[in-house]
Image (cartoon, rainbow, N blue to C red; front, side):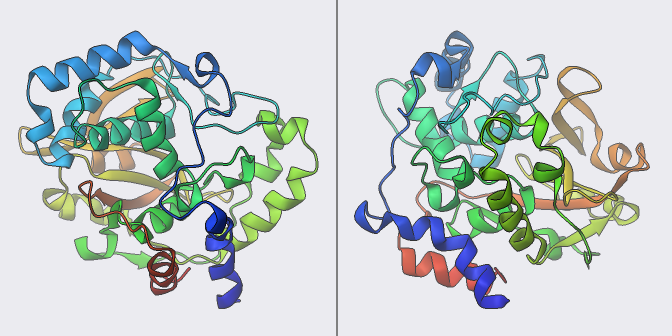
Length: 318
């Protein structure tokens, strides 16, 4: 089982042998008008970031500022489902869901560390590709995308993009018996799975492997005690009590007046909002069990060696 889990997480990356692990497979599988929405909003945010020198800030502080620039953008679900068959890195500043909110913010924050005269939509799509797909590669195949947040944490930590700090914060416990099956049970809601029935059994195999990944989380009753350790830009995964997946929601931490507040694309508020403290947010919903946290790492720490990537996955229990 252990060998099988490891093989699952890096099989997609091994397909890079002809490309080289550092290579991006490309962000042009679909026309830019399909894969990138809201170019003017993106350019406005990046121009503000540059004019105010946010590129000089630590990545977490940069993410907090960029996230605040997204407040008010409407919540729109399933914004990653942009074609019937062809998978492509994408960004949509006209509508964000919880996953795409933290992803585009992280992508912009990483991009600002790479000096250039102008930051194009394609530049952001390359950053998103690096974090959204196993091994950072998208060759146009839907199953290359990481669909469950706990797997995203492991794959991105193995590649030097984030550090899972959940256990280091204190009070974490191991989660057992969780069945990640949302994609195959609710396949009618996913455009690619609906239009490609042959993908569903393959997705079921992926879900079985995700179920075997180790997960530690902080129960919500203990989150208030560790809030002071949370920092700007921390990625906060909301662990659910329900079967279907480990996390039902995700957002960013931003500190305000000494508090660790939760910033997220909210289905309830229908937009990106700066919400209450993370502990109060968790306790406001009976379905919330607790929290997992990943801290973004600066650009330049990426793991570009496939051998090191695979060894890191093994060390992380994948």
